Image 1 (cartoon, rainbow, N blue to C red):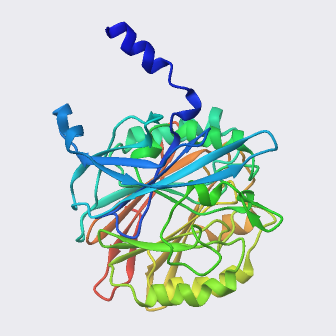
Image 2 (image 1 turned 30 degrees about the horizontal axis):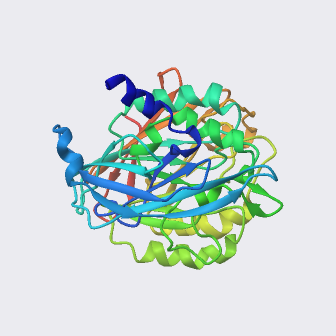
Length: 393
């Protein structure tokens, strides 16, 4: 009987088993969780969730939640279905188990813990461009980062996750490289220029990512914000509608009750690579970051490393915003002479990942080589006036 049961499981068609499972950042990670996945053939979109327990009988108390499915045409010969489900009314700071799929095929049960609905210490991982040779070379970076911070609360990707926007095999490699890590740590992601073709974002972006719908019209899932345990995360899209995002950004920064603010987008305010500059971006957004005491601006695009500490004003030369550019994949550029002169730390031909730890009064930033050595670090201390005090000790 046992042999026959095992055989029956093995006969489940592979195209009906959920793949590319991703947990997404939501507008309230204390009470909501949104998961996306894919099946190679049409299937229902269903999620099941329960409070996790060592007793495997927890599955008997699970709640079934209907999701949504959308067909994506890949070629004349192939279509796939992307699914999403949102689990709501969850309890803060509680460990849950979920699975997704349908009677045609289920995923494994995945554990995750909801956020606190109050300020609380947390940590997250930040990656610059993965982009090229993602399966063979980015995989070592994301896996080493996870080994160093296995209880990360979030993973942030600053664009160019892949190289060719509509290459299905490249997206498959991105999910392969991160594996099951993607399914239980909420992702924050913004599109880079390599997620765009002829002014249009990748066909895969919106089906794969379900982020808060609180940005400007037309940039759903690429322009958004959310609050997390005393910090505000703001995601911007530097590929289009930059000027239109500016008043939205100003409003989100002005009406911010959180102690810390982090902003991410792809093209840097201060470029690190030779022959690159984004003056319009700098003119529009950088004064807002300084005025509203943004802690760190997390960027990609230039395939080098650079950190620039920019003071808020002459009154305190050691208080202000930190601008970071990093790269996690194998594609490399050269550091510009301007960056060498103006930045406090630069690096080239180095795959990196960043671990950021946030407490009530301090943010600690550490950049590591993919081989595990510490490459750069600094701390920000929150001053009484709300500014951020630099420290490299």
